[in-house]
Image (cartoon, rainbow, N blue to C red; front, side):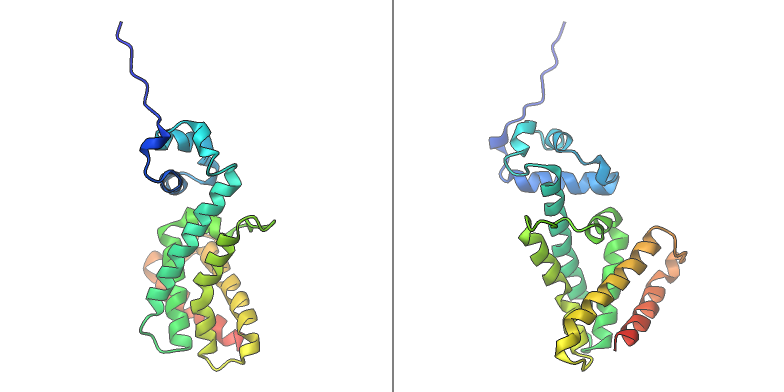
Length: 199
């Protein structure tokens, strides 16, 4: 009787194990859900012994924080590119807002993780908070470009982004029923209303 060879799991054959695990987590997240992610199954996906995972991610929370950090970096690139070349103030804000919606539409499960409960409650993941801050700078710059007083820009940015995240989440969950063909125009219209309300 032939014996099937076991899949070899050798941590030393991975050039960058944390990145391999991040990639496996992102694939599982979008294909299934946050609940589908387990360190043991990601080890199997990456072809390594599950004990090796704990050297880089001691628990699931630390892995999810790394996934969310990656997401915020990606979002930051998306919204910055969207706002690039737009006039300062409202035009840049509207473009960045649409970029955020399109990011959420493209990777909804990652977006829900990022926009969900704060993962860095105990301050264990400072790189995550730094990534959030960096990603949202384009909105702060946008509000500064409207002529808003500098001392209220940060607060207005935080309130605006929270409201925008809520709108996007409701669209993605189909609680706000918006036809896909109209979604970009709808988000732009709502963003404009929110921006005017922040002044």
